[in-house]
Image 1: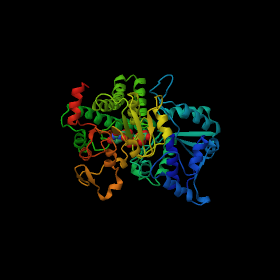
Image 2 (image 1 turned 90 degrees about the horizontal axis):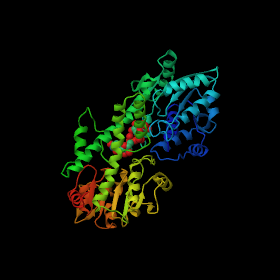
Image 3 (image 1 turned 90 degrees about the vertical axis):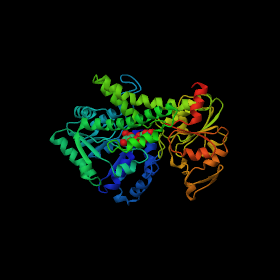
Image 4 (image 1 turned 135 degrees about the vertical axis):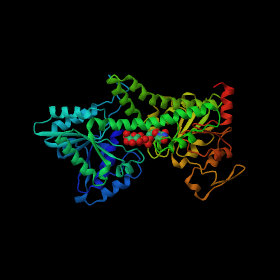
Length: 489
Ligand code: UGA
């Protein structure tokens, strides 16, 4: 999965909302295009298949969505070209580990320059460093045919995985950055008229390309910063060993309308393909402009996220008497968040790797991530003691500890009020089938039974009454604090 995956959902939504516009999704990768053409994209995104099947059911003359590998022909026929290519963090050369790798975007720009004639509007959808629109304008006008004219627009995407279709259909805002010239504004008008088919006019914001490019990176950096901030406070709550609780702190801060409640859920840290990449890009821009204090400020958001994952792992070790060597541990969830099959920078990777390196026997279950992707994501670590399971019950059977790494709603506990508990015997509420049967899970575990909730999703009182030691991010439990003191961790 890579950022280029925006291309398919975006194409499907434009085709769905604008029946008169012919949308062509072009990619050199044949198997990927074939999967889209068959209506079976290789990743899970709620609502995507439904939209695709509506568009695909349209009779041939009205069917306005095509998936092709002939990229050059697609460019030649198009008036408006969305660039959705991947721009990963550079793993080599200048800016390694920080700057965005623009080789794919340059390659596609050169192809556009070679094959285009007439007027084309090029729209940056990929997240790219500030100034890329200027670079593209220069590259295309220098390398393009004299018969071709290009206008570059920045139109960053703000959808989140798992809610992509909702975000595309009802965007909080649409940014259109253009050159501040008559031609630039005309091109922006054309793109705006496409969105106005389904987006209210006042949600469409226009600006210059630099501001639009920076706004995209800044929005992700600020979202990640909120999560890192609440996670830094979770560390304080844990360290007090008292009754401080990060969920209460988060609820109290979130009630301030100037702060708001979103992205304040404490946990094992943020993942995904976007936050880290975009913050590192921002750090690189700041450094290039000799703004070292600005670079250090944003870099600390990433450092805090890494520290959160390390701290969570250390807490598991501390609670389990300082060693997990040879101990069976189940990890529930592997995707970087719920409702997606994407594992990019998932905090679960650090947890599973860390446990394997400590010699634990780890069984993993995720409802949507295929086994081969779990193994691929774990990279160069000895996988001899890794087992990938087909159900949460299989993963947890005979485990010493269960670690909740992704907040899939199917892992939830019923609230203590909705289930009747008598001496550890559970009378399920009517809607019990919506929840994981935690009493079945705990019955098959070895004592002492631990549940480490990395997403603060579970009802601790409920699990404690079922007989487990429950550990949540951002609050200390009495025995946990005592244990830490006694083993000197
Ligand atoms: C993010 C942004 O939210 C989108 O606006 C943006 O368009 C997208 O990146 C992108 O640039 O492509 P995404 O990475 O899909 O979207 O997912 P988020 O919902 O933002 O979650 C990111 C991570 O933060 C996940 O690991 C999630 O579990 C974690 N998170 C989220 C928390 O730990 N706490 C929270 O309160 C919220």
